[in-house]
Amino acid sequence: MSKFLQFFGSRSSFLRKNGQNSIKFLSTDLTDEKTLKMMRKLKIGATIVGVICGGASIFGYYLEKTICKASDLVVHPLEVPFFHKQSIWHGYDVKAVRRGYQVYKQVCQACHSVMIYEYRHFVNQIMTEDEARAEAAEMTVEDGPNDNGEYFTRPVDLLEF
Image (tube, rainbow, N blue to C red):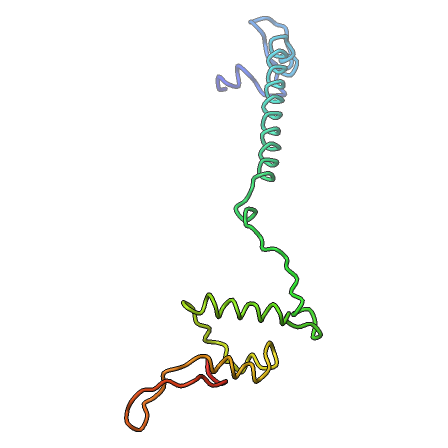
């Protein structure tokens, strides 16, 4: 028999204690006071570790929920109602569009061009046809060459930018 089995024995075997003839089961030998104190300390330690780990988990969960994400810091555009897009019965505010065109013509046109609008687009929108022709006639464009090969200036037509 090995020394381990001689010292501890198996669960069903008996142990002799200190060379005495008293026979005890192994399970009853673990009930002495030192063993109980050790088991009590082990239970308290395991409980403390469990409470600390559980608290750290709960703290981490709530910390994750309260962290501000980069997508939350985006400034969202204002909700502006565009009345001209709500139904077919609404249109642009003609006076506001005329003022905008006047500001463009007096301030912005020196540096910026609007190449997507022709003067014919203004007809029956913000101007009558005669007003649009007069507005186009104020502008001149270099055209050519003529029969002599020279470039010349002429007033803008309704179909031009």
